[in-house]
Length: 117
Image 1 (cartoon, rainbow, N blue to C red):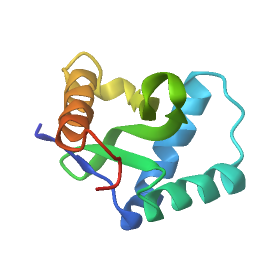
Image 2: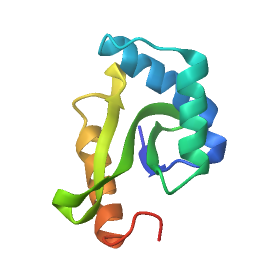
Image 3: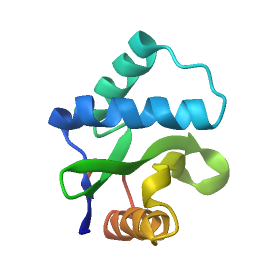
Image 4: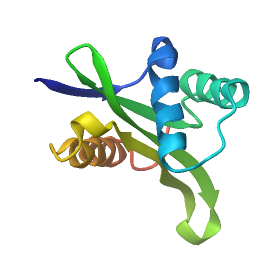
């Protein structure tokens, strides 16, 4: 099974939302399809808010991670925070979570000063 991790784009909304719902269910977080769907769509359209990554096993979504930006004086400005990360149960213990974090770290190192440059 080949696993692929890539930055999610606007067209990935319908693939990501079920993963977000699965994460919320796993972590006992209330899920509102309309509110969460709207927020995800906004994140995917506005790179100044953050980034999303999607992990795929072949053509099937296997997991995702979301990095958002916060402004904090303590850290001298923009702070990047992994706010969501989920790997479907079929794909756990295969290194996918580690690979998702590595992809996020690579992106942060490549864009250290400001999130959307």
